[in-house]
Length: 391
Image (cartoon, rainbow, N blue to C red):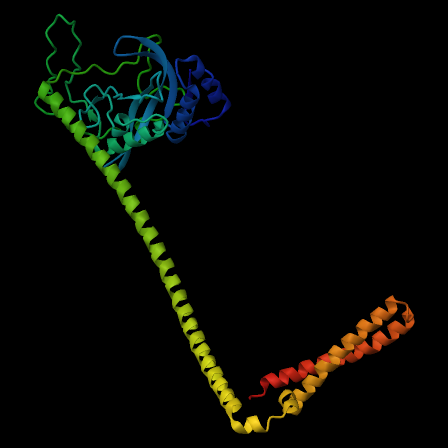
């Protein structure tokens, strides 16, 4: 049973297939389904199958694996690389196991990211982090790595894959490439590896009941193995350093943007502070001028009071009477208003003690209130004129 990656992740057929996940030996079936949804939603030429997986210890278990192709961009063209991604029982706590599966006309190219058996080595696989790493990111890194280090070669004429021998036999010699060494030839274009609706034509299907095993690994020398490991370590180190530098660059850019925003805020606040300082300086000058004016007036009044002429001819009544008609009118109007307040108070007491009736109270209150309003309005107008008059 299998479902196609080009089908909606939550379609009825896909959900029916997901019902099989809890019956498989996965510790976190729900997280496995989420990883599959993301991967199959992006890579339409992958499909999920359940097959028998044989571990390095010989134990066989029914597990899920993704089978199909991932895109590769090389020398201005797009190609599809056949791969197989096994999800172990401990997934996603443990990284998936990935292989390149060559067609009959191709062989695996030993390089920094793929060894001679077809197994794929990536920095994201080595540094897999549960609950943080994603299966779709592994496929993205795989596609990018293949573009830098193509994993397949066209099979040279006369090449034959070495046949595995029993352990008692001497080791199989390294494959003979003939007079002409193998040259990298890009895989067939995308149309050569279409995603068939029946799941056929991409590469041979697994036989029922038999494990999906990687191709036999040709015998290589210890020096070649060391060189292969060194190249793989170099590629992983380069990928890690590049990722760290990109993260550091992003942090520096964010810090620079924050510094620019802070600088702009400080500049605007500086302008506001300068305006406030100028306003305070103007207020201080005005206050100093008022202090000087009142000091001069105070000194003049003190000199006048100390004068002997004032002392001999002091008129007590004239000292408390206004010296101008305007101020005399203001004093009279204020006196009239206060007197009318007293009249209204006495009228209220008379009404309370029933010395006058209500009709008499209302008649007098209406007349007195009108007179009080006119006196108050005229006093207010005189005060406004007095404030505008200098001296």
